[in-house]
Length: 348
Image 1 (cartoon, rainbow, N blue to C red):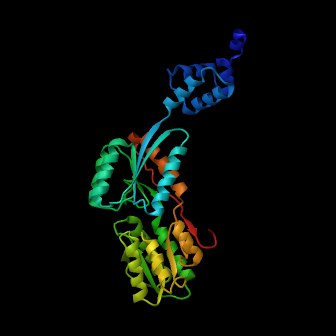
Image 2: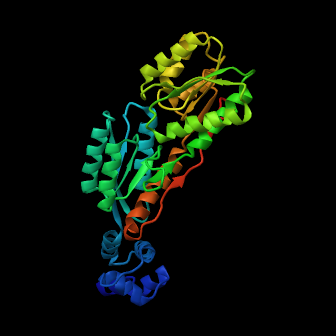
Image 3: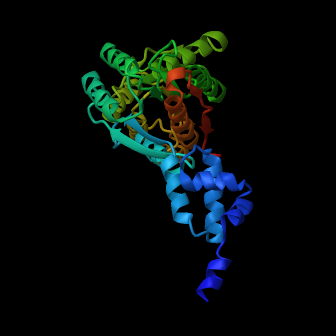
């Protein structure tokens, strides 16, 4: 009976046939002595599992040992901000979903956004991670730290906001010039008549917000000069300050026609509008589809949300970081400009 069972066991030629490869290839997989392409290894493993090949455990070990391994670091803003929580979750899911490599995603949320803290955290991640992605404002201290890390061959990716105008730092995010012009187009087309427009900016050191505002103003200079664009008010990425600045705009400009929230603080701006009698009477453009903006679109407080497609953004970021690691010696530009989504109350 034992002899019969042994005779019926799938053999190496059986496995080769099931996997669609040669017997020599199966022998190379089993011995681990020669390099075999990852796709071939995976195909042999799947075939071994399907026919219950006696050496399946060995093949699984060979496949696991041959998979590329990457440790990727991510520095995001405060975890109490919905956008960054959602972005972190999307990055974690994408790292787990990578089929042909083992990706260890180290995701950190920073309460302290000072250049000193961001620089310190970047240097710390640079000691243990193969590549780093960061959301940060442009600052000489941050730029110096990025130079140090690049000199150590650690690929750096800027998320959401570019850190270099020359492309020295890879970037995954939106074309913020187009974002600003799209926001302007929406306000011009939706407004019943020209009027004053308020602009909220979180921090002028974020390139994305500078480009948002520049694109916004360029559209009105080109197509709708009859609108009056007020000087931007700083929110310092704070919802509380954004609420105060929106209240100031409403108080000082009773004829305000529109509001463009070009940076952080949309929650505070919406709170100020709801506390006034102007909600739904002013065209409001802001960022990201999340719980608070979804509710504002539905009740009319907010008119349009321009949103990062987080799943696509996470895919492009993780894939770009792995490519940069794999081809580090050869260089390359792994910047990826992703399309943005536009939401109104009618398509959410």
